[in-house]
Length: 341
Ligand SMILES: NC(=O)C1=CN([C@@H]2O[C@H](COP(=O)(O)OP(=O)(O)OC[C@H]3O[C@@H](n4cnc5c(N)ncnc54)[C@H](OP(=O)(O)O)[C@@H]3O)[C@@H](O)[C@H]2O)C=CC1
Ligand SMILES: CC(=O)N[C@@H](CCC(=O)OP(=O)(O)O)C(=O)O
Image (tube, rainbow, N blue to C red; front, side, top):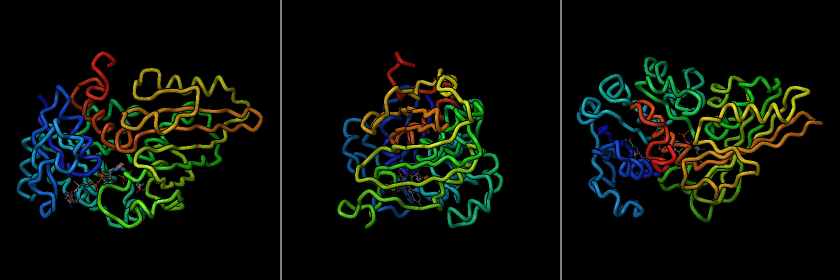
């Protein structure tokens, strides 16, 4: 059994990790942690997330620096479902020891320290692990992930955006014109902590973070091309729908575009190529990313739509895909029924 623990287990992504890892045959989920002064310390996880009743009733344990150091030697796999700052500050103590670390935060996704400081609002001081971290876009970097000590699990919007754009980029079909990404997320994307802007009566479909959201440089870094990215907050709980409008090379045929997607995703059970536009209800509470494209040959434009559950393929399920790769398990182990692996 692979001995594993979750730091930040009480949050939205942490709770999904608890569910999938508790039910997974190959992992022994032996520790659930929250911050040292957490109001939820010592409570059973299923008193916070009632969907876990009958699945996991372990108490949430408060962390401190001594425990942290010990975790890195005691565990095979550690999931960090914590704020960016906490992941950043702890990595020196956690990484490079016995445990493989899967960090769901954004702290180790961006290689350029200046870009990081601009978009995250605090300086990155861990050059070693920022450089060594492997980006955990599971369908695109499986070999590197398999060998990684630290996996920086992608953000939810970048997962939806890159899954739609990378096949076209890899096939050489994009032009220099900037892809336009408009994506709508459910409110769970903002995490579980209370905030006025996320409360029921305040949320109404609205763009935010215009031209300054931290996911824009993340998408650009792993696409290899600048983009315009506009996130929107929607009045629903879960899911992201990304609508991506791109110019393609003159003379590109629909068959070339189809081939770009089928080649990229022929062997990837997590990505479902669709012949109709996906909707959020198709993917919420699933680990899948649904992808569809429409091609306007006269104008040389393609509209790609992708849909994911932000908490699953956008975070926890992708982290489990990456953990599976590091442990030599099938990539979708524990995420789909055994017979479908
Ligand atoms: N929600 C989403 O759709 C996505 C989230 N992410 C990223 O994943 C991470 C977790 O997100 P999410 O689950 O939504 O967040 P939540 O706010 O729902 O949960 C955060 C968790 O971290 C704990 N925590 C907070 N501060 C600290 C600290 N200083 N030290 C230790 N634990 C702490 C919280 O418990 P407590 O405060 O009680 O200690 C809680 O368990 C974040 O970095 C987020 O950016 C990535 C992709 C998608
Ligand atoms: C709706 C909402 O607020 N979404 C979050 C994105 C969540 C995510 O992907 O998290 P990372 O911070 O780990 O990148 C946001 O826009 O900040």
